[in-house]
View 1 (spheres, rainbow, N blue to C red):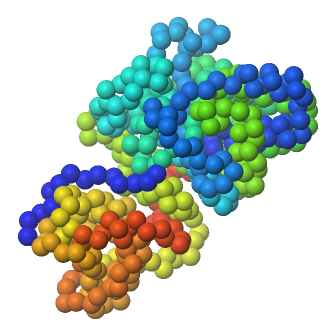
View 2 (view 1 turned 180 degrees about the vertical axis):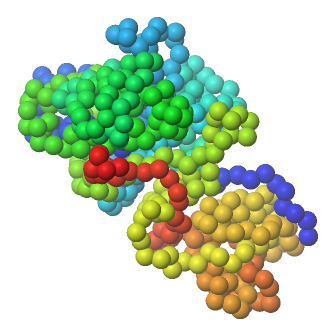
Length: 460
């Protein structure tokens, strides 16, 4: 047998900021804001293509899981000149991949650091020019339109994005100000002349300019890095959700209208969210999710091999993205959960007898993402049937059973005179794994910076 040396791939299927204001928006639409006001708010909304393939079907908003990419644009093409000169460039200053579960019980909002690098796909011109693809900064994709950001994030994560929402600096400031500011709590005073930030320690109410500065500051932090500032972004996002769900925003017509006007005037969405009724339908789902089940978490990263000032996803990030793909809960190492009954401790050898180049490498990536230890890859003689063989030990038997379940292959585990577990991939592997599973596979715990939307801002 010879090693399976084909390049690895990522075969995957396919709130941050949006949660608070969409929840308010549905209230306004459902109770009736009046024809004139409705028309004005509808006219505020700008749309752009979700992807260059405009013929693709859009998912139903009312049912099923949804993945929404939230983009904070750093474009200086604004009415105010307080953010610097407009040089024509545009990048995503913030990227949040928000997953709404199919049963409306949870929302997982994964922050993707703007310093993330990767092999970005080519992007056709959807109104902002075309991009030939190649290695680069993920946040630079927005220069060619939100459809390019969608394509780049899909390639990085393997998650199919159903919608996007883009907002600029002025829209964010106007949204916070229309709410009457937000409440935050800082463990220490923060000053950053570059971001125009000067806040004392402790609990306080801040306006839109201060909230934007707090979310964007690097120089006020010891590490002065993009990763370090994401904790403040989580605090700001949590504060927005908490404030938007308070009655003083919902019941005051002046604040409600100003809020909706500020948001709709400064956002760009895909056509699937281009009508107020579409946003209302989405918000009706969001309203069912308790704040305790809205989780913000930062994509786990490591230093990029090519550049120590950039980052790439870790194996824990792969587990998080797989959970989004499978519509499964993300289990954090800090969660107080019952011990995982799924044992993944026996070593797994993967043999490729399917005649498909690189299949063992791809399956190895899948298994590693679930938390298994892959001891080796090799090619085998061609075989039609996929089999799993395990040593006659409880550890190996339980590992084999769990592996079969999590890979989605309904085969009986055989017992053999081997060490650990051996997975032999046959020609039927693709058909086996294409069958739907009744329940999503469990996720192994991951280590990620996170915060629940209902967390007391002075305790985390």
